[in-house]
Length: 565
Image (cartoon, rainbow, N blue to C red; front, side, top):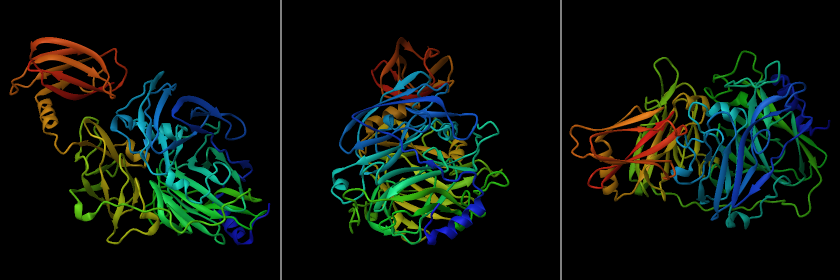
């Protein structure tokens, strides 16, 4: 095996520290692509031969592990059909995408076993890399860990006009980084911090790359581990994009700190390197304290070779150039139209803190509750959110619906790789980070968006909140929501039957009840004769979030959330 001299010492050291079982003998699996406008995705149990011997039980989407890469074109209307053939309920979230709350696939949008969820939405994102994954509260970490996730590539006319590598699987590669642990029978051990690296589901992976500019779409798909992704020190390396789109210009980088849920696009110039092999490392021994997998941060079981160590993610093997290679990058990539700080409508403070026992972690000391809206945002408002981490561990904060711009990181402007559009930011112990964002397009007084820690174990344990976006002139809807306070709905969550009562201080009566799904489709309707209380049999509904619309004798309506177990 031939290595470039400048990288041989790094490889030797990292192998010595990491003690990895794999020797980079397996070609990297490149997921197939799907293009629209109709996308059919099926989640199903499967198995994969990760290791010699017994097969490993997994979850996959249209394939045994992970899912196909979805290619979206900005401006297209796409029709998604997500079929759940698992034995468990799931959801499907389009991480980073700007879609209506009923299409977002958050914890409220259950997909029970043997059912299909079919949202449709317009692609309104800049050219970038997103991903899709389940978001079932309490089970997100488990389902993602088993393999239910995939990459999304959005293309647009502006990005297409730039001289960038973009031939999928040739000079433009998806790189989904995850850590896994296996027991003696090769079954996955559900571990917060696992001990073996998988890239696109491949252990001990190598990737053949051409001797030219090559683009890597990096995604940290791990549940908790953070990676300090490094590159060959003697080759030119540039970050060209962050979570939500292209940076203003290519930024020379040596490493990219990548937290769970974060994406980054990096171009490495392998020009003139035909025949050389390079390790692709993660330099975690150099990470600041408190970051998962780094020195002084949360780690796995004793002896985990990845904790606080430098290790190799996979190996690059450089082959001859392709025809018409990209050999240089544009000096300008993007122009930002950032919301102005002078036009801020509201500021919010989100404090990351811990339960008095030290775990779970919360936001503003409040555990997640399906039935509680933590924040109400006015449509088209510009807001500044300030994140303050009072805990001793780092938390990757993610918000649905918008891309934001970091305005301040501990009193200073963000470094160039963090100055672009973001939806995940790693908030380290003691950090104070502010970002600005504009909440455009979609309103719904009932169905919320989420914000949460993207450490999936923290999220599943309750480190999550939710917000609704409403019209500025929402007087009618505001009264509707206020009227909902005149009713008592119980039990909620419900299994078989729910009961609705009119509060004693509320003058109305119940004339009609409707049960709607999260998309607004009426599923049940029952009428009453000026009742002050009503009972409804919901045993036939599949588990999930529903809307209960009550109409009084005057025709006025109120909408309540109902959770069916």
